[in-house]
View (cartoon, rainbow, N blue to C red):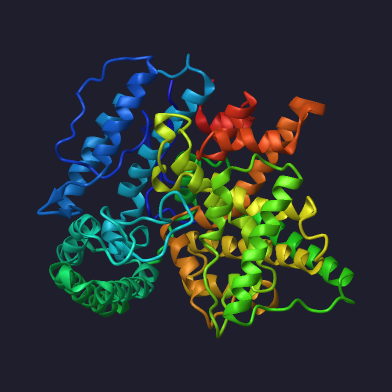
Length: 563
């Protein structure tokens, strides 16, 4: 039987408790398609195949309808989607997973979590109405995640995925998304009625980045693609006009942008499937920040007689040291038998080492240019993406990226944890000063997570959260003079739970590892653990813990409402 759960509204602030209670029959669905209507009464089922069919229907419903090639996020379309949601929830609730193997039950909970994500969008986030940056849809760089971080309108054009000069086929593939931009941004000026000051104030920078990407695209198009170039320039003009319009509106916005403590906790538990409250995460992040600073002090004391690390200073040095870093790291993984190294992993890392950038360094460049091996460990993301592209999926539900960044406790938790675990496994034994870099990374993740938590509690503005993260990151490397610190906090303000997922996911993986070590005793190996972990796919850590151990920790049991 599904529980009665309190669903707080957006303006749920500290010390204010929402009283609205509804029956959560499965939780919310996203982006309504006007033609996708479930039956008024869903037939009962206990077949996994029916969940798979439902999942396909749900994903079609979640996408917005296209009107003249433009995704429809109008108030009327979103109201229709929201009103249809309860029927879709009933349809999922009619599928009983209780007799299935745990992995299939986990898939059911994944689908419910995605539906909860759409519900939260309609009740609280309302990105189409409150967040101008939602309408950015052209990207020149590849995300290291299964899907791009944050909420964005449908129809994204991921330019990094295409080779230049563009072929006629690729030009035809990106053309619809480019042509939609003027209409989408025109619609945005009608849809955007929110009053969230920080979301409006910090959106123009993101919108103008799209303009830069479009300008670069136009310059790279060959003469035989003149029609596409015309569309790209129209899209750029529309983007510039939209940025100017948002800038003009921003000074009139007066409301805080955080979702509030109660909403934040609901989102963690029912969308991200993280069994902690807002306050739990504050406590954990404060502990991680203190731990990082204390251990950094100990490392610095141990290494005080050693010379400082040499910083990459030229393009030639960058090419050599980064290539050597991949070679060293991959050899370490094989030599220490830490995981099953697949043939495509080496190439996946080498393809993303980047190029030398002179001038002021942002935070991750400060780390990377001192020891390129360190951030190759965080590059586990590229192993994940390569695996998703090349290996058979664990299930139809896990064949592609989950919606609403539900994968982040798994993906960011593993990549962040891997940095410290590889240090403990001996990767930096010959370069002790690199151990300092690991604790600087932990401190930065904890500091920015606390900034996110306090932004969403409406205790800090985005600028104050950025200043807090900068002040609590060692050595001044997360500088307010750069762009990274504000871009990160802007993402976390748009996508609750993302900034905390790095260290919270790491803690969840460590708990899972401890349980498996207890279960297996002398049969436990790190390689065996990592291999079974990777084989399960990119789903929330709470579900992976249940699936891989056969056990439900009490906090997870309560969160999932499993008998």
